[in-house]
Length: 585
Image 1 (spheres, rainbow, N blue to C red):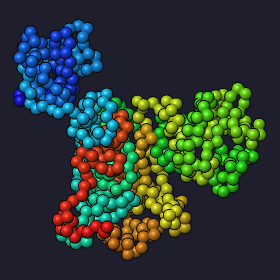
Image 2: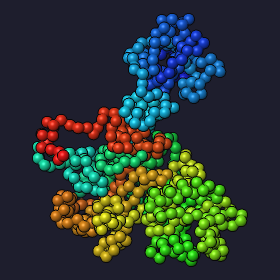
Image 3: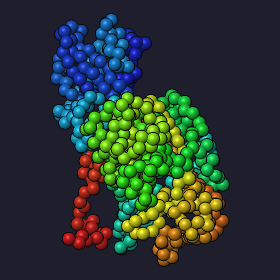
Image 4: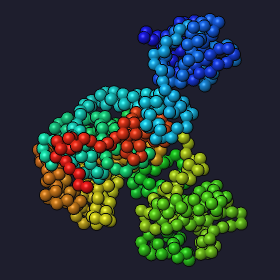
């Protein structure tokens, strides 16, 4: 083809040069006897001009060009006439006067516009992803992802890490989500599992003396999807021996500093702030708080139980708590807006939402009559309330109160425009509980995974009060999104057995699922720990996208279906017979 330049590489300094460009016809228009096309490739757009007075043959050929035709253009780069520059394009100072056009391939009329302002729904975009990928914003996202992953590899290499691949076909060891299972043709009735993470293998690498491991790992989880989840996803997987939490924090802060510098040309402040899980829940109602704005939760249980409001008093009597948020400046919210907030609280299992408006006249609220004037003044002082503020309250069990108010806080932050979009606020959340209670099965569940080490001083509580045991786990949060999590691991066989016992796993189940790991720990396993960072989420955050599907070349939709090639799909009866699989109708 002898292409000389990409479309996004032509500027005023190339004026007077003859060039050969290749790309897709993005737009075509006739104006003043001239024909213009916007030629697009992965780098950008160049305006090409066909002038019948200079080249009638090329002009006539160009009249037949349709949207998304693939063409080669030979022409002369010229500065645009003064006043016709396009400041919206990086190449807007120049245009290419065509001297020859070669149609390399024609195109049917595309089912969606390949433009930034196209309004195609997501299903159409995913069905014709090969067209959607031509959009410059998608190309920009993929370039960003490439730069981030390259920075990760260079950074860990410079810090003495080895990139080591771990198996994709492995043993099913459920770690929370459902496994994707792969039947074995050779071993009838047996299955491999696709890894939810390389967790056990990276720990075995530490037992194997590899000391510093990382991998851009592909992981698979059969779980319900959201904007920031996919059934298959990528993570930066890291494990180190002979380390403590501070070693991980320092390493990962250095990584993010490099990523921001090399991908966004932006410096970020390190070290990142730290916050315990208990503080995060009490202040923000979330273990992944968005710290770009205030609206912090305030406990008012002591004042609420002094009121005559039975809902508050009843909640406290039953072991609940009462927390509130001061929505500063939201005192003029309409009845409809208050109902919207109430419905949001109910989505998160609260029974309702109480509110008080602060005005010149005093306190306006259906519940104000249940509070004496002195008590209202105390409440107002504790909530730091002033004129035109809106005080919102939820009373219930802690889990419900934090969930409801935490989500109301995020909703208000967006509605009131409090979260600065250009801010990048990092935070380490530490000291998570080791267990949470599983009501359905009446047993403790591991908050992170069963290989997380408890804090040394809390180990005695494993026998007496496991729900009070704190773990050596940590999450890294960016603008309210968890972008990574890890822990110092259990490296002793006896403690790992005790952990499995607390999770109500029988000796037989433990041996069947994890016997090889327990055996490995008996042969001098070093203290170790690590972290996994979500590549897709990091790329989403840095790209300013709303969904990780915007930074993955070929994602699944919300139903875990690939609309492009139609997977998952049925398979031939012959394949099922080879695998000795028969469906039970």
